[in-house]
Image 1 (cartoon, rainbow, N blue to C red):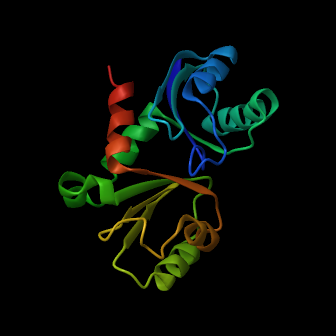
Image 2 (image 1 turned 180 degrees about the vertical axis):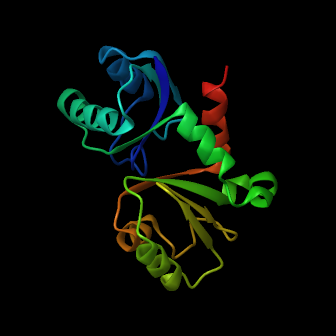
Length: 180
């Protein structure tokens, strides 16, 4: 069994796409996953499964969440090994230590092209700093996410892929849940 972390996109935000975490755990257990747990109310699922690839698990979770719970959303699944690499690859260690709530890791469905990354950086007129690494983007929002013009929709449009973000505190809490 391999432990995985799944992030749900855009649920329990502003009363939209609501899902209770006990229902999410029940769904995962009903799919045969083991050691199922959740973190916070923002759609962070931890579970153990066979040797299925993350993309296969994403499709299964998306299909079954819609079928069983009537909720259409996207899942971004990473193995614990991939999650550890995400933490290790953080290009902003100073911000991670001093201001982790303003550092966002965005899980991406697909790796963006170099041209797409340049296009995103070109439209960023604020103080935000953007770096990408494979299927992740790391963004520092020094003035806060809520007031930034660098929105999820803009990021997805410029990178040409779907995304979901978690602040660095949540990234580390998920890593801690899967350790030892």
